[in-house]
Image 1 (cartoon, helix red, strand yellow):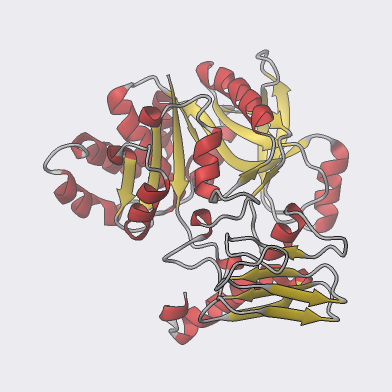
Image 2 (image 1 turned 120 degrees about the vertical axis):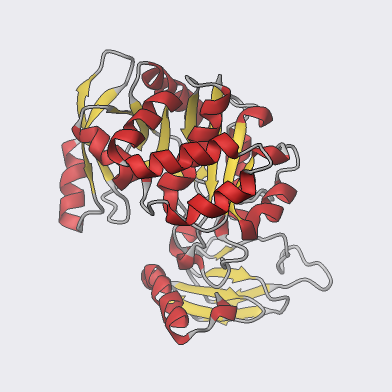
Length: 372
């Protein structure tokens, strides 16, 4: 039986001011369809997992919104973290809870805020990753690079394992400089690290115990009490003291050095929707390369009374996110991002899209919590 786990956390700071701590990017419809990123993630896993074998791990602030967006998901399958403790605790909690049901279950972890264009190709890649997991490897799905990208980590592909398309991961590589990224892509030996993991829960928990023994012990105690009356008490006692570390650093890199990590290549239109420039490249453009991010609020081509509109003249490659209820107009501008929300307006060049995070850091430093 396959269990799907969707970690739904973070605030998507590079998509501010649309994405906020209280309503982060995975709850927004950024897929070019009415579905939110979370709903799209849940939907593409339905071919392999049922609602009963699907879990979402999220924070207290987002649990109600997750339940509203996924009405078919059993309430008990929404695992609520009291505070963020990074991905190793979130994914490890799900693994520990699943192991109480089925100690040798295969589970996959898939971030709630990623975009996949070709669902059948994704499903086929996932099936191959499951084969590697059944053989006892901690699997990570790699993405065949299309260009030298500096914003992603990379997987150095090692020797074949004998299972179809499954190879060992020789090394995890951090986000590289451009010249290094070019060398990676030209070599044909590297894949993008998509942060999609598949493994048997017993194999993962054994490796967690080896590398992060205190985190493993805490999570197992929490999972033991999860569906009991002592749940809240045990969670409040143990959760704040859990090691705060990503699953990549906490488990996968060390497991890779021990020869326990495998990968399969995927080519299914993956993107992590990291910033507004990327969003502009993913969605449909007009003849001038302009993009209006449709959040279900309308524009001048499809006007609706009382809803916002966008008007552009002599503009090229402009990304507009109308989210305030008022007209957004742009004349004679190129390569811009315009994000209009009720309490904040962002205007920046597309080549500075990654720097939006710096604005969020400045707001934090100023104590402007209400804008975060």
